[in-house]
Image: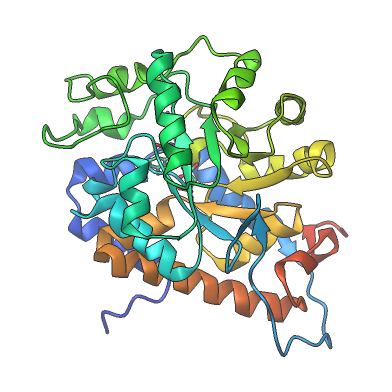
Length: 357
Ligand SMILES: Cc1cc2nc3c(=O)[nH]c(=O)nc-3n(C[C@H](O)[C@H](O)[C@H](O)COP(=O)(O)O)c2cc1C
């Protein structure tokens, strides 16, 4: 047996061995019975690829443009909180890994660094900022402005978090944040006994679609609404001026019992795919998972846990290795599918398992 890590599962195993039970459970876990967490991964079994042969795939290009940001392959780093739990360098290491891999790093509001500090860690690299919109409007306004000033290229508003989901692994492990974890992008403290209740205080739960206008007036950045699971809400996002949506159930961490994101993708693409960019996240462990999402109409996919396992098992190098691994799987998959680039992957390249198309 060698210690070589050849797929994402290997990185998760290595991360699990390194992390304490509390942080590992926080990262790996979902809400409730974790039905949605499992469904996200299982949904990829429900769709099969339809490869075409004798297509010239001698040269394939893996890089699309996502919301005006050029990336080298169609998988971006999703925002995940508290990355210093995974590695002492946390978000800074993740940013350098994303930069060297040639993709976007999305900074969570719940990070140990400001947007400006992240930008300084990887000058010129594409970075996006994810917003948890606090009740303190002045604070939110300054935060959003600081992301634009730092050169972040898009603003992702996470809309599926009026309150933290019930995550039982955290309760069982009595998970709490270390006292010395800085969280400069929120105006409240999370280092309290009831971690989940404290998390609920970081957002203004009274927000509605109408508030998007105010947010747009504060920021020149393209606005993306993250956490969309219905065609109705995707349409509202488009009507309220969002340039994109992320089909996401927060990695199964919020409302347990909602569908797998892959199964929601077709209805959303049908409703708004010609008006705004549709991004996708949830359960990605393989390059072929990304290809299925592209075939169902996603512009690009985002990865939460897979890259986190890289970071937790080997810091910046580990995160970069996971991104390189997935990039390679995407490239091999494109060739085997008979596609010269992600743009060429279409609805005809996928079918529901057991059906004709
Ligand atoms: C440990 C962890 C922390 C997360 N923190 C955030 C966050 O701060 N903001 C946010 O919008 N989404 C957050 N998410 C959700 C991710 O952005 C993404 O939607 C999800 O992880 C995708 O599923 P995957 O982990 O199966 O790839 C978090 C997910 C995980 C696993």
